[in-house]
Amino acid sequence: MRSLLIPLVIVGMLGSSPRTQTPSQTLDAYVIDVEGGEATLFVSPSGESMLVDTGWPGFDGRDADRIAVVAREAGIKQIDYLVVTHFHADHMGGAAQLAARLPLRRFIDHGTTVDRGDAAQAAFQAYAEVRRQGVHVEAQPGDKIPIAGLSVRVIAAGGSVLRSPLEGAGMSNALCGPFTFQGPEITSRAADAEDSRSVSLSVAYGAFRTVIMGDLTWNKEHDLMCPNNNVGTVDVYLVSHHGSETSGSEALVHALGPRVAIMNNGPRKGGAIQTFQILRASPGLEDLWQNHYSVPGGEQHNRPEAFIANLEDSRPAAPATQPPPVHMGAANWIKLSAQADGSFTVTNSRTAYTKRYAAQRR
Image (cartoon, rainbow, N blue to C red):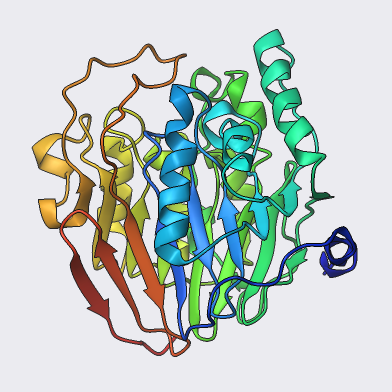
């Protein structure tokens, strides 16, 4: 294991402010609606914060504003660790606008983009300029992000995956035998080069476990989970790649064995029928929560409204290569709150509906 602690303590020399939130007894995670992008804010029991991705750029700072609103809700005045899973606009694009609203102290990512188009290079350079304002660490599998009270481990980064099992993991994965690789018609798109390099994390608080995968691809999941499951089981699966069909294989999802899944989909991005089917068939899954009603999923696959944070979508669909149409209205989120004994609650901010899940022995 390579700890990130030594390079990251340099931040103390840069005059970083102390923790700004009163310590609590829970690990809280806010799955923020950024219209089919990604932004998930973790707040540790120690009061430290870790934001995974920053949503889209543009839209008059829509996504940065939404993150800032949730940060205030959580009592956070800075982002201690910003993890950028990979260099696509829906994951890193909001960094500059967010930096104007909240201090960003430490940056963790897989280094540099492999996309070569002019637009992709310009977007990466805009992010890299923001990154230069803090301390940057290039993540490698096995790294530990030193957040007090948590165990945060990098399980994939830069196209490489974890090779030594996490504590309690390492069992043979029976789902590797029937694994079907996705073919060139799905995986040959240039975008998949960045997706497969996603920084993926395991986050543990006491007996509680979750993972957040970025857009790690279906085929790269095989590298991570086969022949042995080096990640182990989790209580909550933060659904990969917005619920797109190019991620979330049975070898990953069923081997993780989550009790609850939370999908940060957009109304017309992610939320694929295949994803609903794989989740529904996952042994032991009790509930799926969604950030949006999935138009592709329709009435047959979407969960009841109590489990969906955002219901309305009256906008036309965007072309596949463009960000979704701007939506400046209020956005709701899904909040996960975990205890060290492994029990947790999930709350829909739109309705304040909360469901409690008791601790279970592994």
